[in-house]
Length: 422
Image 1: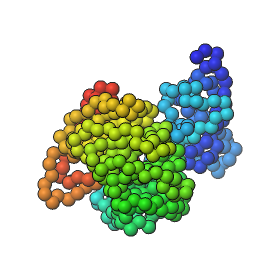
Image 2 (image 1 turned 30 degrees about the horizontal axis):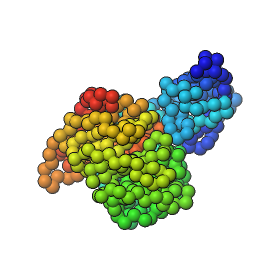
Image 3 (image 1 turned 90 degrees about the horizontal axis):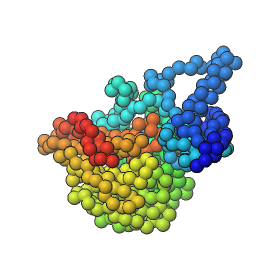
Image 4 (image 1 turned 135 degrees about the vertical axis):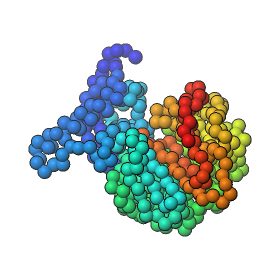
């Protein structure tokens, strides 16, 4: 690429992903990095806020947010969160392009528990920021909205709830399912939530009103998970009937039933570009599917026990699977080859996920043994709000409260375990 072309001046507009509110229009060069564009947007936004303060004495003063952390911005374009080191030219941003902005507080994570609550924890201090109490039974999973403003929880009491992450207040109770809710996830823009239930249906809900927008019916068994495609146009569901289904979120109609697994399908994940779907099954395999045709592209075999979790890397064709055989495996979905097996746990691995930059893999396991009849505890691992979008559903782990919990981090390039924490 010629130096002159990289110096080409362009103008980019930034709007809030959740509301469409205009934030800034900034000049830049096609050779600039995403980090430079983000900084320009932050400066312009701050200038506008200062101008408003000077002109309006009743305006709210600029301060740290209610979490006690300053906001961070993530830029979203064509369905994915942009990495700071990428150039505008490389990601396809041209003159007149509009990028979406995800605003979120500093990183925090969510835990969901059998005591009927969920909690928000600071990743900086380790302190509990909020307790979300209101369910009458186990909370099996929790997830944050892309902008970090909302939290959704799903419970065995048959309801999901939407909460303000800032105040901890329950905003809406999503009632309508006839049995336990096993999964709940936000759409990429955060305007909808999908819930997956033991009653065999999934439902779409408006986060603005708390009303049910559509009921996705057709499976012949309980639903274990559901997730949105990167553009929000599709929902994938995984079922105990050994199938996954793709649904059109606008019409609520099933576009494809994905047949091929021989046992329960536990999890689904869309590729970052939204063209493929990965499924994880109790039949010990993962499968890759074409979104447009519903065709099975390949079967990823190699695990010796059930697969419980599957996740794509944020910006590549890498895929990680987690299995009851005590390992996670890293796959190249383009060549459909196994790259390496991540070993170290001595019990079932329930969850595997990539870090936002795709450089680290987190695995979660129930290591050690459980006493008979021990009470259960449910923990949900979710993506941090600051990452913007998650490429996989939040994974729920069920384990006895006396069992030891271990999380190991590994480097995809080497497979080396960096640390393990009990």
